[in-house]
Image 1 (cartoon, one colour):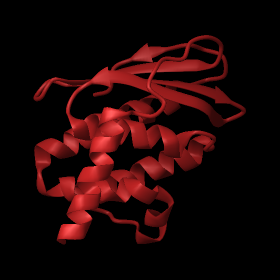
Image 2 (cartoon, one colour):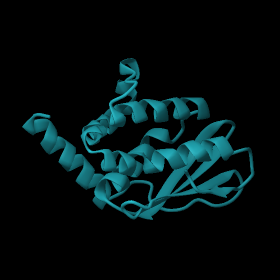
Image 3 (spheres, helix red, strand yellow):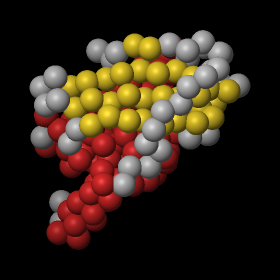
Length: 156
């Protein structure tokens, strides 16, 4: 990673971790809540999403942890708001491929925008778990969300 990209990466991560977007909770009809934690480092994330007609109408998160887990969750919520369930699931797979360095779907990377800056975590396996924590919770929430049912679960 060149110096300019490294500086941008650090700037974006710090901005999202210090001032997370969509931080909070959602409750009520059509809301799904999934809790995730990373016991190896202590990161915890709660993802809340409201589904309406197969789309993510709203999404929020709360929790605590390292800058990478918080920034990844913040950036994820921005990208997922308004997305149809199948597109959100596909984007989660693309993100996984980028941060793990496996199964890169280059044609889809542009759709992730600044989330691509987290690509560097692939060189630090423990940080991959941090970056993926909110995304695993999102995937489970999308699987569990059915109309107006409110559910809670914990990612694997």
